[in-house]
Length: 309
Image 1 (cartoon, one colour):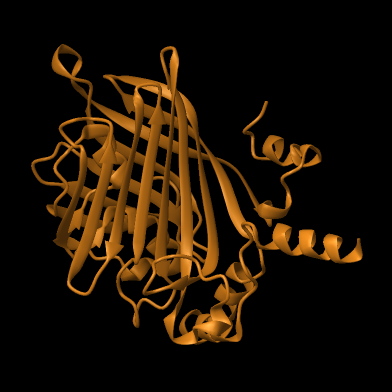
Image 2 (cartoon, rainbow, N blue to C red; image 1 turned 90 degrees about the vertical axis):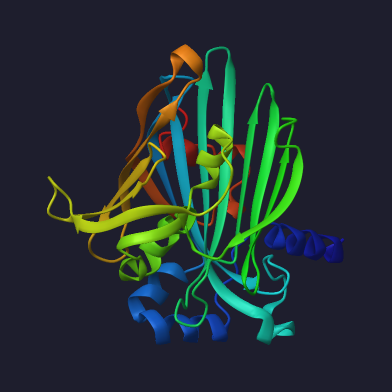
C-alpha cells in the first residue's frame, strides 16, 4: 500500500510540472541573465496572466478571454520535446522559456478555442532561434494543427487541417524571426528583438484564421516608449502588403510584463470583409504551480484570474 501511494505520487508530480532548475539550467540563467532572472523564472512556478480579449473574426469583434502561461523547462534540442530526465542527456538539454497562449471566444452559436506553444531558448547568444512552435484551433466546423520545428538551415512546417485546400502538408521555410517568438523574447531580452526592415514569419494563429500561404514577409519593426504610459514600452511590427500590424505593450523593467496588445488585420470574407483590430488587455496575474492544482477545491484560482465569474 505504501509503495502504491509512492508510485501515484511520482506519477502526479511528473504529469505536467515544470522541473526545478538543474544546476546547468540555473547556472545558465545566472550567467546569461543574472540573479533576478533566476529568482523569478526558476522558482518552480509558472506566471499565469488573464486578458480581456476582443477578437476579430468574420468581420465582427467577439468578446472572450486570453491567457498567457510562461514557464521555464528543460528542452531537447534534437527531439524538440520537454526532457523527462535532463541529467541523462545533458548535451541535448536547452533551457527554454515556454509560452502557452490560449484564446477562447464565441462566434454566434459556436465557440473557438485556440492555443499556441512557443519554446524559446533562454540563452539567445548560444541558441538564437526559437526551437519549436505548435498551434491548434478548434471550433464546430473542425480543427487544425500547425507546427514549426527548427532545423539546421530552415524551419520545417507541418499543417494538418480539415480544409481540402490546406490538407495535410509539409514544407520548409527560411529561418527568419518568428512573430510568435516576439512574446517570449520580450520576457527574456527585449533588446534581442530586431528593429527596422526585417523578414518575419507571421503568427501561426493569424495564419490559421486567414488560411494564408505561410512564408516570410517583409515588415518594419520599431521599439518605442508607450504613447501614454511612461512605465511601458511598445514593440510594433507592420507588414508590407498584408493589411496587418501587431503592437505589444510591455513593462520597460524586468520581468517585462505584457500589459496589452493590438493586432490589426483583415477580417471576414466577401461583402463582410473589413479591417478590424483584435485587442488583449491585462486582467489578473498569479505565480502558481498550476500542475499541482487540478482538483475541484482549486477552482478558486480561476476566479482569482477572472476566468470564472
